[in-house]
Length: 288
Length: 280
Image 1: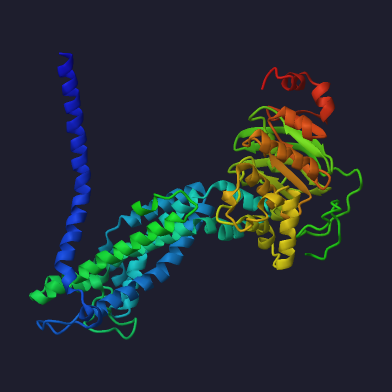
Image 2: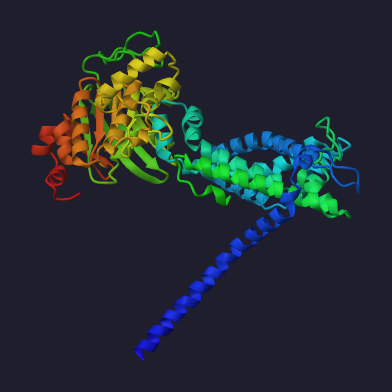
C-alpha cells in the first residue's frame, strides 16, 4: 500500500515536470525552426551579387538587394540619430529629475507608445511629413522609426539609471559636485553600457519594421541620391519580392530575411558582450 | 587653486579648492557649527526637535543614540544633504563659522565642498580607478593641472592611511579593494577637496574589528587638521575617539558634554540609562 503510494507520487512528479519541459521546448522550437528554414532557403542565395548589385528588372533572374541593404542602414542611422539622443535625455529626466507623479504619467505614456502598432507611426508620419512634403523620403522613414525608438530607449535608460545605487548620487553631491555634473560624469559613466545596450536593442527592433516604412520611405528600385527621395529598405524589399510571381524573387526574399535575422543576432550578441563588462547587475537587458 | 584670501582655520591644508565669497576669519573660540532651534520634518513627521549644539573646531564630536533617534538626519542638516530627501523640511539656524548655511543666497554645492561627508555604506564610484575616485571631486570642481592632481592624490591617500596599500594599483578598479580599504578610499575622496569639516555617518558599522580600528586611528590622526562630527551606534567607539559626545533620543538632544563626563557622570537620567546599557 505504502509502496503503491510512493510509485504514484513519483509518477505524478514525472508527468508534471515532463509537461513543464514540453512547454519550455515550445519556446525554443519556433526559433529553431525559423533559423533552420531561413538558412536552408536563404543561405545559398547570399552571394557577392546579392550583396553588391541592384535588383534586375522584373522577371529577369539575378541581381541583388544592395540598395535595400544600404537603404536599411541609412534609415536605421537616421532613426538612431534622432531617437537615441531624445530617448536617452528623456530617460535621464524621468529617472533623475521628474517628480513621482510626473514620472508615473510619463512612464505610463511611454508604455502606451511602446504598445502602439507600428503601422500607426507610419500613418502619423505620413500625415505630418509625407503629405506636406509631397512625397515619401528617407527622412520620413527615419522619423517613423525614430518615433518607435524613443519610448523604448526612454524606458530602458530609465530602468538602467534606477539600477545605479543612490549612494553614488549622494556621494557626488556630498563632494560639492553640481547635480548635472554628477549625472553626466558619474551616474551615466556607471550606466553607459546598459544605456548603449538598450539603444542597440531598440535599433535591432526597428531594423525589421516594415509597416511604418510602407508609406513613409516607400521603396526604390535603385539607389537614392538624396535623403529627400524615396528609399529602399530590406523589409520592404522582402515584402515586395516574397509576394511577387517569380521564383528568383522568392529566392532573394529568403536571403534578405536571413540577413535581417543575422543582424538581429549580431546586435544581441554585442549587447551580451557589452553587459558582461558592466558594473551594474545584468540579465535584465536582453528581455527588453 | 583660487587666489582668495586664506580664511580657513585649517593651517596644514590652508586653501579649499573652491570657496564662496571671502568669509570672516574665525576667532579662536568660534565654534565650527552653531546649531540653534533646529526642527526637522519628513513630510508631516517631525524627526528633530529644537536642537541646539555648538561643535568645537579641530575636535571630534560624537553623536550617539538608539536607532531612529535622528542622528543621521542631524548630520545631514550640517551639509545641506537633508533637503535632498523627498518631503524634507527644516526650521531653525545652522551656522558654519558664523555663516548661515540656510540663508537664501547660499549655494548648497559650495557648502558641501567645505563640509565633506563619509557614508555608512562605503560607496566608491564603481566605474572608476582608485586614483580617479580620489581626484574626481577636484576634477569636477574645475582642477585640471595634472601635477596638482597627482600631488593631491598622494597627499590625501596618505592622510587616509591608504597610500602604502594602494600605491602599486592606483589604476585598479576601486571595487577590487577590500571593504575597509573602500571606506578609507571614500574618506580620501572626501578629503581630496580639502573640506574644513568631515561628517562621518557610522563609517565603521559595516566593517570588521581590524578595519574599524584603522578607521578610528585615522579619525584620531585627522582631528588635528579638521573638525570631525561622527555618528556612531558604538559607545566604546565614541569614548575612544571623541572629545565631545552628544546623546540624542527620540529626536531630542538630551545632553552634550565632554566625552569623559558624559560616560562617567552624565547629568541626565536618560543618558545614564543609555550609556550603562539599560536600554537602546
